[in-house]
Image (cartoon, rainbow, N blue to C red; front, side, top):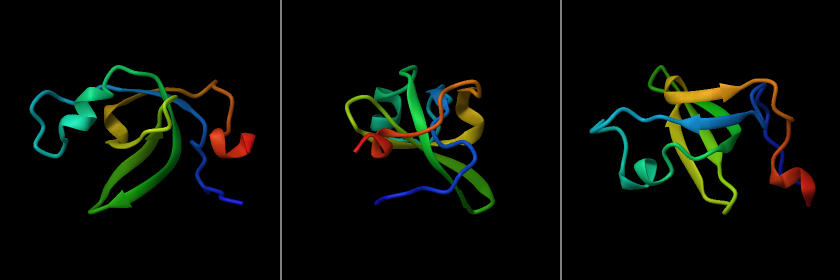
Length: 82
């Protein structure tokens, strides 16, 4: 079974990437303002990135600071429903 180890796993998140940020691609802006849920958080180059899953099962990475988080959300991801 696929498991992730992160205290933010399952937290609802709405990405708000900064306009014209060179660290983001078109896919980041396509999923901006949509509600997803965090699968895991990783640190790369001293910055925290969140792996965000959306209802269509698309996974997109965002900087943690660019996410609006709902910490009261139910924990878990679609992996837990399998």
